Length: 247
Image 1 (cartoon, one colour):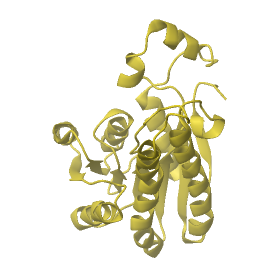
Image 2: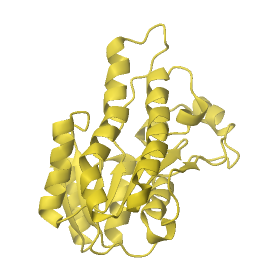
Image 3: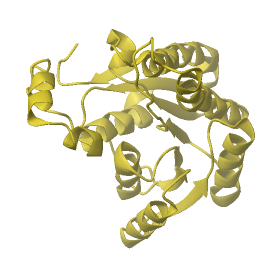
């Protein structure tokens, strides 16, 4: 993917899981990293230390992406610190799984507000800056279930399917200013959540995956970095699935 030297990347939900790995991969390639977080501040601070030990530069910005003013503050802080924003990775996401008959309005609204509205808020906040500079790359983290659906996740699936639609629309809006917008749709990835699954449940999921293994955070990060790199200059409005052949 080459170097991202002198480029600034914002990663929402960047202090844990897939977001953390994305931050590290950008940092090792010399990018200035803006780590957005809402909870677990100590993990964000630890990540900054880790990045600085690698010789990189990073800051952490607390903010709830579901609130437009806080999303704007994340972008404004990045610009104030590093002078510009070249790459935005919308990684923040939550789940509130339940069957439709049992799902509360709050469970639906909270997931839509963070996952879909939060992505819109961040894109909205960085739009004027990127279009004015006539350069920029937006990578949104969707999900395999946003393509195929999943029982018990109507809220999460709707949010991720919405992100895919948003991605395609923004690609058409921003293309004339050389700003690209793509999505990465992970399948089952090794995280704390999947590690907690029983062996029987893991085996059931693995049957759906031709490669017969869960992906890693690094697999997802590699796709994100490719889409943010110069090698993907002519790619926009696309969804790259990282799912081991699941669909």
